[in-house]
Length: 274
Image (cartoon, rainbow, N blue to C red):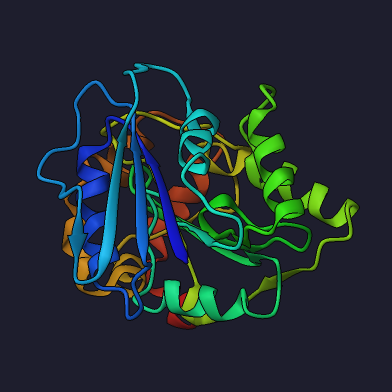
């Protein structure tokens, strides 16, 4: 069985887009497990079948202000059968229409799959950045075949109460255990990480998501946003509340770089984001 997992909680706006992205998938999972522990519960989600895809909505007790990623994943794992293909589909990131299809095909040859090249867009800073992870993928681009050994490794990682970096812990353990794995750069499964939503529960904040991170490229004319998100660009643009101008009024380590970007907007090279 092909199963997608989406942990969520108090992210109604993000999940509304996530739902649209799932409905656009060229190949839909047999089952989509959504685990919601928000104070404001998801509404209008059909707990049943849509176009041969079973939607299983699991509601947990509300956990305001806490990062409950591992707990929500563990709740979903209770519903996984040995032999399932498990693909993560996070509530706040952007997925191409071919994501589920491409990841499912990769799982025909490997027990664990992760995304190598990472692209991010921060709505709060109106900026983007890219980098390649040579050692591990992120949870939003992670999938595994739930054979007994792999499944037990993943469940053990999620049962570990220390830290929230499930992806790093899982892939490091997978490599140490000699489980076949593959980090891909397939554009059909290229996830765009979306940060700085200005709404909903916040997740863990890595160094590269903070305002002082110096590798941001400032998207002064929304060219990158339009390129990344295509027909969804206006939806994402609506979450940009202050962008560059207000951020410049609150100087940070990157303020000078922002000013340079504003003054030299013409230097934007479209090839950098394709």
